[in-house]
Image 1 (cartoon, rainbow, N blue to C red):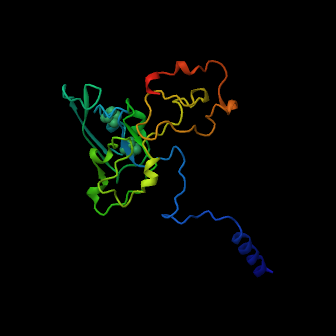
Image 2: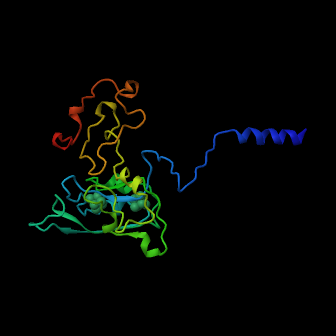
Image 3: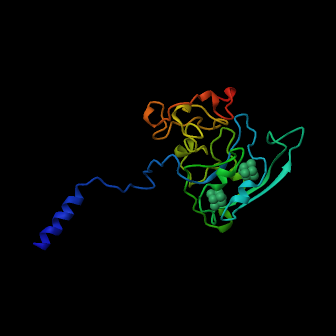
Length: 221
Ligand code: SF4
Ligand code: SF4
């Protein structure tokens, strides 16, 4: 009797859908707020968003960010601010992917992507420099020249460093409206679950005019 019960369990499991995939040939879609490797973003005009303020380094619980700011050259400014991130490094061996640096950044210069393949053969390579972190001119994450074998170029196209889906507060009435600036890469992302304007039940009644979004710039839409 006990033996046949065991077979029943085996047969039942055999016909259930598989939860495993043939990674790396098949990659599962990551949740929108997945914390992958960081990028340093640019504005759509190509200027760097980092102003070298070191807030990210100060808040990092793993102490794995090193930043040094410098004054922007007046005739060829790197960022729209007074200063820019002259040196920027993250030690990925120490990072715990908590995203506190993303929360702390006043200009949304540092964000996290969906890229997670970061195997290295040398410990020094795990320290990502500014050159590696800064996005390409089109806003996609830096992928090296020639492209690293660790990077799936198709995934890269949708993996820019913009984690925000619709609005900072996640209110459905802000769907499609960036509060600061759009991504230079894939642009606005679709709303997350419960943030779509069609899902009216999740939106708060009352004062929800998108025109009142803080820091909203019409010219950046
Ligand atoms: S994700 Fe967390 S641990 Fe990693 S660099 Fe940012 S603040 Fe530090
Ligand atoms: S990434 Fe953001 S928080 Fe860090 S130094 Fe640059 S502007 Fe400041």
